[in-house]
Structure formats: C-alpha cells, structure tokens
Length: 400
Ligand code: ATP
Ligand code: MG
Image (cartoon, rainbow, N blue to C red):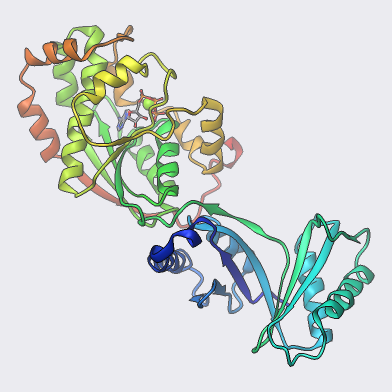
C-alpha cells in the first residue's frame, strides 16, 4: 500500500473573501514550482480543497517540500481505495501507522455517497475494531485522540487520512506585495526576511560590500543566505552594492562618533533608490531594539530620517534567543555564524554614539559632498538571481 494524495488545508486564507481565488492560484503555482523535481506529481484544485496527486513519488519527500510553502495551515496524506469494507480497513490501518507515536485514535466517517451500504457509525466501529486488533498498546479516545482517522466515502472512491502535518502558515508569497530586504551576513536580517515572506511578501535583497576590506567569501555567504530564503519564494534577486568609496569618505570626513549613523543613512538612501527602480514599495531590516549600541531608539530615529519609505522591522520586538531559534529552524544560523568580515565591522568606530540626533547627522553630512559616491554606488550595483539550493550539502548539519 502507498499514499496516493496529500490534502492541503489553508487556514487564514480561507477567510479572505473575494480574494480567495487569487490566493489559491498563487498557492497552487508555488506548489507546482516547488514540486518540479518530483515530475510525476500533480497539484489539483477542486471547489473546496487543494491536493497533490503523488503518482508514485516519495510521499514524505514531497510532504517536506509542501511544508515549506507559505499559506498552508496543515496537510495530511490520503489513501484512495475502492468503496469496499476490507479495502477501507486495510487503508485505515496503513494511514494510522504513519503516525508512529500515536497511542490513541478515533475514527470519523463521512458518507457523501449515500448508496454505500455501511452507515457511518457502523463503519467507525468496524474500522476501529480492525485497527485495535492489529496494533499493540493503542486505545480509542473519542475526546482527545492523538490521531483522528478520517474516512470519506465519495462518489469515485473512499479517501482515508490520518495524522495532520503542520504547514508553514502565513500567506502565499507574492500576495501582499514586494519588499527590499537589507541583507547583511548576520543572524538577524535573514530571519527578518523569512518573517516578512511569511506574510505573503515577495523579497528582493540588497547587500553592501566593501572590497577589498570584505572578501568574495563574505559576499558568497550572503548569496547562500538568500538561497536558503529562496526555498520559500522561488528566486530572490540580490543587489550587490559596492560600498567602499562611500565608507572611506565617511571614515575620512565624518566625526568618528557619527560614522555608524551616517553609514546606515547612506544604506537607506541607496536602498530606497534601488527599490524605486525596481518598483518595490518598502524596505525590510533586521533591526531589533536594544540589541547593540547602534540599535537604540535615537539611532533608529536618526537613520530613518533620510527616507519616508515604509521600513518593515519584524524583529523590533523580539528577543535574541527567539530570533536564533527561528534562524536554526530555517537553517540560516550556521551560515550566519561563519566568521567572514562584515562591511560594517571594518569601518565601525570603537565607540559609536548611542544617542545620535537627526540635527547633528544632517549637520555633519552637509559639510561633505557625497553625491558622486552615492551615484556611482547605485550605478555600479549588480543584480544576482539566486535560486533555492537543490540539495543541502549536509556541510552545516552538525552546527544546527
Ligand atoms: P544582522 O544580524 O542582520 O547583521 P545586526 O544585529 O548585526 O543585524 P546591525 O549591524 O546594526 O545589526 O544592522 C542592522 C540592520 O542593517 C541589519 O539587520 C540589516 O538589515 C542592515 N544591514 C547591516 N549591514 C548590512 C549590509 N552590509 N548590507 C545590507 N544590509 C545591512
Ligand atoms: Mg550585522
């Protein structure tokens, strides 16, 4: 016996009224793309549900892929059999045994095809008895079962599902617009990108690097991070900004205490310009209040002064430990932990001002002409299209 289908349930999406069709189509397209390596699979949509037809592909491998698609609340395998008692019993036992740790269960039958001769109640008892007789240490619990075995007798066949697998939640990527993620090599910004995508946002990313002070490996690290994020949203375009000239000028011309603030303001200016070019309506950062000296309320205020673009900061109210937990889950943690230098750490003053003001930042900047360096940085930005890695190498597994 084998699982034939994966049933897909979408929670939040279902309440989106007339947008529902649009959301469903996006979700279906994401699933089709995601399952491309599994050539035999088909993603189908009927009036009231979506499902993957496995056609002999490895059920658990396909399930794993589906669990990375936003917009899905939960999933379960289904076995499709003839509407015949013995077949239904065998399939039910098979489906139940997929839930390895389940100790209790109940059976719920639904008979859409009223010509099927066994009434739902009777079918529950017969199947329940069969499962009990063929398992050890398992009991029935109708109130809080570990697994609810669901049998649906439809017109074409009987469908049996057992355990629920959690989906990634959120909304299908691309349903709520686009954002430009300021992606460093650190722990925070990839997590921030993940959470934004989870809300249905399609990302492009921007990274500032400063050769020769930062190496190609540091840049590769960022592309690897983008590749992990691309698992959730197909491709991610990463804009690589050459930042050396601007940083050197800041270093030479701006009082040390304001170097960090002005550098961040430059990042915001460049990011906004690139976003405009790409018709992207917001920026996303990994800023989290109070984490480091540079992330104070004053600092955020002084940095934000240079753009009126919406800045999404999903981590602003999160604890570091919770952020790390997510970064482990989404597998960006071991990449972020690689020790390559970051453009900021190189030029950053030993003692950045923790309470900068807009007025001072504006004043120091007004004494310097950054126009040429800004224009060049934007003009020389290159775009790299990053796809999800096909297979993880296992290289980082011991760090997780
Ligand atoms: P992260 O872990 O994301 O690097 P952080 O805790 O190191 O964050 P900061 O160094 O203060 O915090 O950076 C704040 C945010 O600024 C980052 O989360 C990121 O969005 C953006 N940022 C910093 N450096 C870069 C860079 N080189 N390229 C692109 N964005 C950057
Ligand atoms: Mg950082």
